[in-house]
Image 1 (spheres, one colour):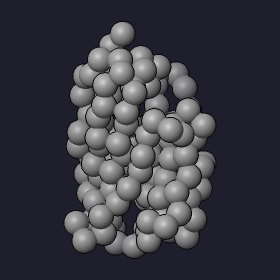
Image 2 (cartoon, helix red, strand yellow):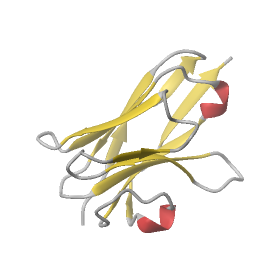
Image 3 (cartoon, helix red, strand yellow):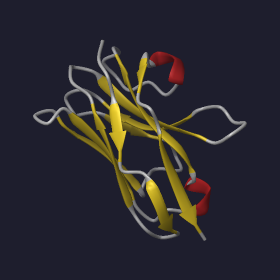
Image 4 (cartoon, one colour):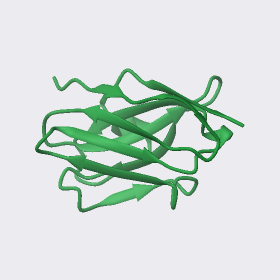
Length: 120
């Protein structure tokens, strides 16, 4: 069973940047999600195992970049131009699907989550 270990969350001012990391061995599509209390887990973006295919939620396009380094078994979520509404717990997850799926039910292993707080 693959295990995911996330790191990189924290507190940042609006307009700032953060990079989240997700250590995950194996050939999996990786997705990133976020969740705020009382709301359903929301798709942020994802990347295929090869790295050749990515998909982003509309709010992430142009600000967030997902990448992976398979030699290091690590995926990344680079977040720029952060806004207070980006405040959430961010999760990485892996899926056996070949392509990035947007619904959280397609992902069967999840990281522990990391808090991202953006102050105004």
